[in-house]
Image (tube, rainbow, N blue to C red):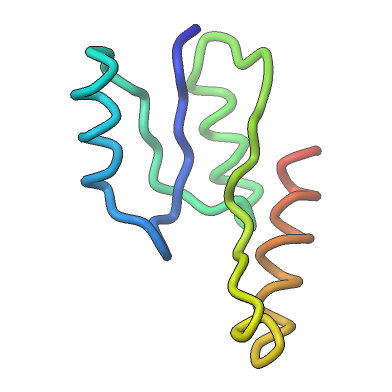
Length: 86
């Protein structure tokens, strides 16, 4: 399989992608975008040859912050997931 990564890097570093490429010996297709942006998602899906499955790891997960910022977590985790499923 060829891996396609979509990440907004809000809580990750692009350096982690470099490390994965180094360890795997494979060049990854990386798109800096957000699951909450349906146009960006469409652009990624249209630009790749075939995407046959999706593993969604873009959810925010800090419990304390989710209590302080519930709308951010809903927006990112729920709406982002809905956009991805469309």
